[in-house]
Length: 397
Image (cartoon, rainbow, N blue to C red; front, side, top):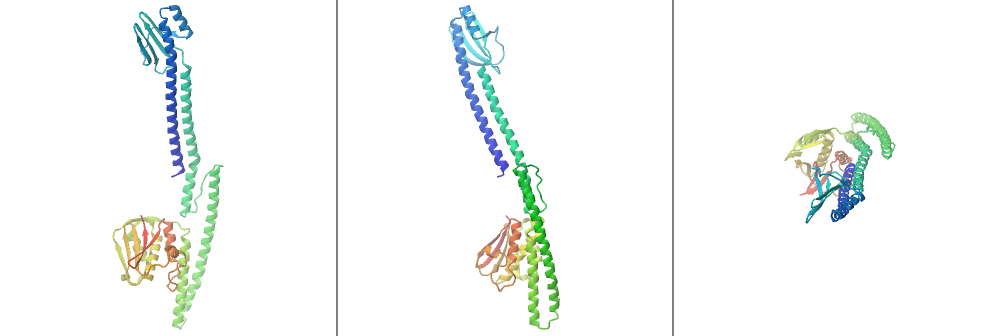
């Protein structure tokens, strides 16, 4: 999970908790204020009702509590807080919606008082408290957006690093901030420049070495034809052929470290045919192809064909009987040949210059090249041994 997603989840949890706490506090304060106000004005109302026949005392009570007489009730919506009927009258306390004032309605026989209270400070405090909760949520939202803005360059850095790791050595990060993220971007750019220069230097050196090696090999092959001794001639041919194969495999192995993959879509059957096209097979009966169900692959056809070609070549070299089988089934391509089980773990043979038997042909670079190609494609070579058969599988799921 990305950092942005984690922060977003934490923000929404904090947002919900803040809302719940704000609602809870508002409910508690509303109940508390309502109870206090109701008790206060209930006491005043009872005092007025008890002295309703004494006009002077009633007026003193009205002045004492700073109440304002009203001629009649408005038709506005009211929230009744208290109502109690008496033998010859009633007491009613209510609040008009969205108002901080309360109305006392006292009636006894023909005497009736409709009184409006002053604004309640407690309600103003409640409003201020609610405003503070709202401001907290607002500030929390601003902090969340600001953090997202601070982290946004990380997406650019991650994208450029991924592209760089896939072989695009020209990728750089443009971040102008002077904070830790800016330092990270500058450090990556410096590292990328150093690596690009190092890889280019190594490629040029390898290319020059390969060119210089091919020239004496070609001259040696030409000189061999002038040798009359057949046994010596064949021995030298084998030596120069091995040198040429080794040079080409070393160059191919090094290219895999920096070359950019050409990703296309193709079928498993196309891959098998392309890999067979890279092999020189004098007897087609040595290979049996079984396309049980074809499937689509997204990869570099050329490099993946080289990997499959090396696996087929090894199967041909090390089999005890023909044909070897190339099988495509369930998003897997398997190379199957008869023979003894590998004496060591597969990882041993994926290292350069390792072989099962030293007397066999080759230099032990084939599987190392396979490993590098598959690793570039985020694939893995699997090995199994069943019914006296070695099975090498590439899983494309």
